[in-house]
Length: 458
Ligand code: ARG
Image (cartoon, rainbow, N blue to C red; front, side, top):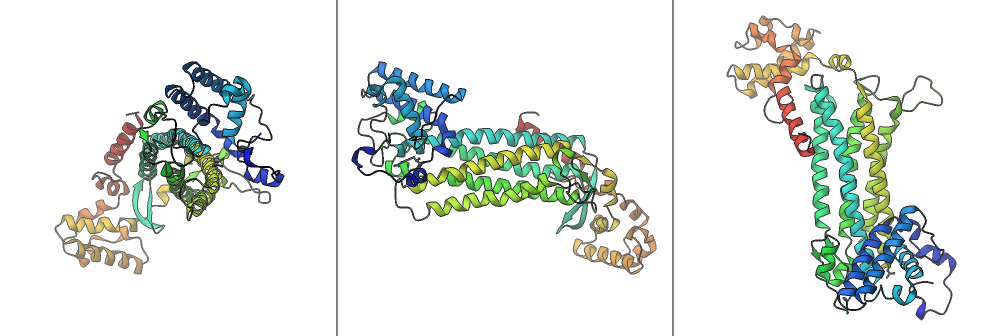
């Protein structure tokens, strides 16, 4: 039996019944729904709508329903429109309709679903935060183990300056850390309770909403019932967070796809995260990373889709809001998969230091030539120009810039001396960038230390 059959005489079109139902996907919120109902049962007992004993029986009955879900023994009925209907139906079967029929007193599925969704998203924030920490941990440990490897750093994907491979890794790890912090803020922001708002106008049985907030570990009840039942900002925020997280994962994927190509060959993906070609026997493709890059579009789409759903809705609850769930669940599942795969890729790939070194060319030290002159008190604007002339001179002679003689350099500026020869050392170049945040070994170790502390490993 549906929860709302009283005023209807005609039968619902079976296609409409299917169309309306959300049980197929919202059953994954079963636990949040039980917890919310248990709290509501306690509040009903406190306000005297049910006796203390009845309150206890309701809570215990709901625990039995939870147990069935946990054991995979819950049997979904065709008539279970959504998870709220299903749990209440089963509770009533277990405790009898005289008692079970009282649970929903003063409550609506509107304040119920808004509460369940918050509880559910809160749990997912913690779980996904944990996955992110694992990913960051893998990245940081890898940076520590491979702190000596040097590689070309790029801007515009053109050779720029030598950097440490560890510095590259940490560059991504810090983006993830920042994003993990944002997830925590998001989680803290959603800790406000809709329950006790009724369908829209409020609760007529004086349930203690502050008690319920505490019971469910929320900070406080939402102060306006219309707002409480119609607000889904926490879902939009989560979907937007997820979209940006995927942008980050997509960007490191792109880096590694490029670095694993034969032209670069800086890294080699483990077989476990690669696939072959049905036609070309030599192929080893980075499908894992390409899928992550591809799925970023899908998660962005989920955010855009839900923004379109919310836009233009009149105040309070509208059934359109049921359309929050599928994008939400899809983004959660996609993120879950992507973080796990990326963690796997990063913990198993092999780097090829020889190829990374081969990628370094002496013109990547042009900035170091300018800096050499700066240290001899020549103004930087001038030195930049002179270093450019040195590169051009070498280019014209079709030689590498490190093959220019001291006299060649002296012809460009009198401040050049024999010690210009010390410039042609990539390690030295990297080690000069030792201000906080730079790519020198000491700066990289500080970064590792910072992240380890944040991870609680330091
Ligand atoms: N399944 C619904 C949802 O996800 C529950 C709320 C239904 N409320 C209502 N007034 N029909 O939004």
